[in-house]
Image (tube, rainbow, N blue to C red; front, side):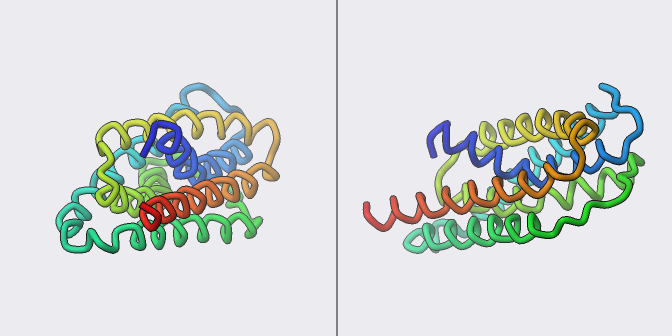
Length: 184
């Protein structure tokens, strides 16, 4: 996976966290650097750890299914991307995002399950997982902080477009990997 594909993957994976951050910005009366960083750090940390967990889980059995790995990668990215597109069509946004520790932990894990699945696919693609996960976490941190500010400024209409774009990006990367492995 080249650096541009990795950056696009990181951006696609961060869209769930970005969408929740938009909602947090919508429901927050006053956006500060502190509460933007708080949200960004939770989401960024979860998005950093989950691909590593998925990678090492996938590495255990990647050797056994190497002949079919491109099908696995395609399936995972189609599923994750398709789910993100489906969620983008649901215009509901939680009325209030609580920044309590327990709530942020639950939200950060919920928005990073996709990163766990993509980490699993990285095991088949022989991606440097530490570089990839740090990039995913950094992109998520930045976009989540930005999402809080954009949410406060522009409101709910940005949420579904972000999830839609993230889903499309992941599906296109899955198709590219599949085509490269079936032609090569």
